[in-house]
Length: 412
Image (cartoon, rainbow, N blue to C red):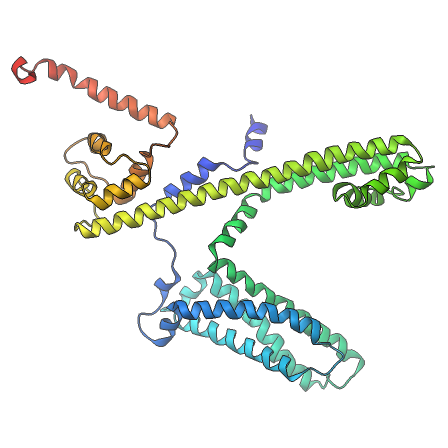
């Protein structure tokens, strides 16, 4: 049972992820602007979409400029003025941008709650150190006059520029489509790890077999002299299929058994394990796409119903009564929203007695969203649904004796 449970945890549970999305209904979505001040030009710029888009554009330009600087700013040649100007421009802009976002916070201790501000803070510390502080140290130590130790120090300083490329990670924050792919990679990490582990084990076993069989075979020993050499050959020429035909024909001249074993390895490792890994990634992408679609639907229903509640004068912070619920779903806009998500707005009136068992029963706004999502026509029946159906039938059957005692005229 334990082994079965561990195997089940290897793969992604779509229903579990969707349940977590629905469980988060009603929780406020994180927005860093909630921690900003309400007055001042710093918070105004930090909230501005134009300033955000300009920052994103300069991040992309900086990423391209890093490649240009790497190719054309040669260490042994005096640095051109354009490289110095651009280097200080980018450093000054991102430093001022970070200071502006920092100054926009209402309380300083709230800064650590924003991951991207902390992330950019580390990048800024590295950038300022490399652009201004280290340059000053090099100048003060007079290392720029061609001493033997100066070149090694300058190379270390230039290696610090690699940290700047990490700033492009902010694009993930501003482009949700890329963030979805990153989420899929994180979710698939466990399954990918065990698939790669299985692949390494296959490489190791076949590496030992080929190394033992290659002893005394001159052509095979060129590829399988030791176990590490065998694993390297199998990885590059077996899994990545680099010149695989040449290797198979070459080792087959010593013994056809080598060719047969090599083809068996390709069948096991490349055609089976690698394709299984691709299948896992495809399945994870499908699950993440389905969960993101569910998240979008939940967000849409929540926002639209909040707008309708504001129009009819209902507060989403209070509990809804039976009559307030009926008043809400009678609105044409609410009916259209329910129809868009696959809920029969007309048939929902029949479930009022189930949602509100008594006249004094109430429901919260997050619970209302849960009810709406649970009544979609494309939902699969679960054990919980059958239990709820049983309770409903028992409640209706419990009313039968009371109806039998009513006068016949009233029944007519």
